[in-house]
Image (cartoon, rainbow, N blue to C red; front, side, top):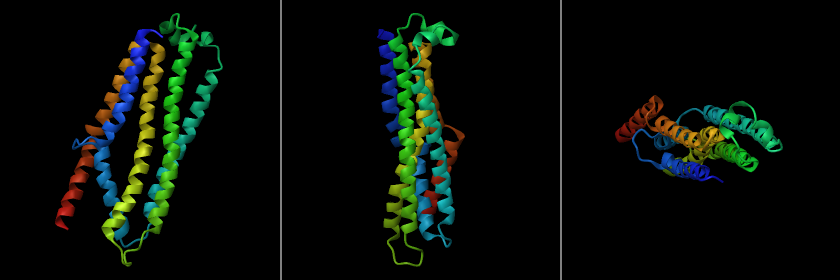
Length: 234
């Protein structure tokens, strides 16, 4: 494999491996994952203290399960298409179209390696979506088993317990969505290693911006601050 391609795939894997934990655990004030941890905990506390039943909360989780199931189904269809492309003679799709402009004399095995990278990113997303669906079903059972407002219970302990189930489930769903960014970057490898590196950097930068500097990130940070202020009054 040419050194440029080795460097490009190494850069891609480095960004992929390091960016995920950074997004999840950064302490930046406007970090969406950080603020959502607190918001979901407040949600679980409301589940345990509101006067109404859990129907509304079950509907919210049910909608999320449907979303994760849709993404998993779509991912599976794309994976089947990608696997099917591995049976095609690489020479037949490297002679025409945009890929031919950049592929040049790229060996067939290298083109298939690039397809396998796209396959790997999609498979990672599918795995996350399937696991998210399972975890969200566990969340429904956990919420359904929680004691009612009139029962004797340790409110803080139940809130912590429910949060410890809900947060991993929704984090897994978010990881599955983020895998698409890396899929887009992997596709750009067909246009050459330098385009691949630029695409990886742009995808990572877009994720960081959306998770820390977008309007949604600032809005969730304000909600987090309101929750903390309310806790201080109670």
